[in-house]
Image 1: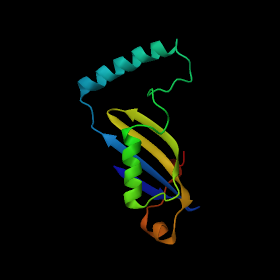
Image 2: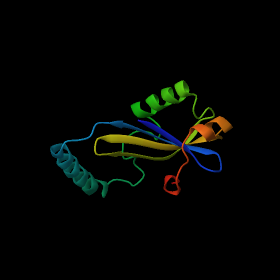
Image 3: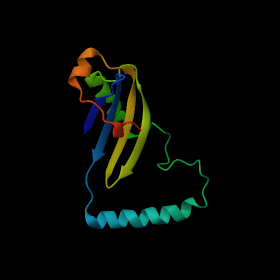
Length: 117
């Protein structure tokens, strides 16, 4: 799912999410795994990435890059504001390096104050 909005200052923000909602049993299992990981993290260095990959790498980022090219969105690239994996969904929130055009200002919904991270 790809959503985009534009701020009054013409900055464009987007959210890309993919995954499947988890069943209750899966959620319980994931919570247990998270608790175990948090116990292990206490002994691991803080700078180790939580996904064990470099920031900006992975299948979701590859799919997002292809989508951006197809949609001709963020023509000058983007910077990541946040990324997460919760309840079976992986999500990336970013802001484009280029400003919105007049057409995009009319076409895209306005971002609310809660959209700015």
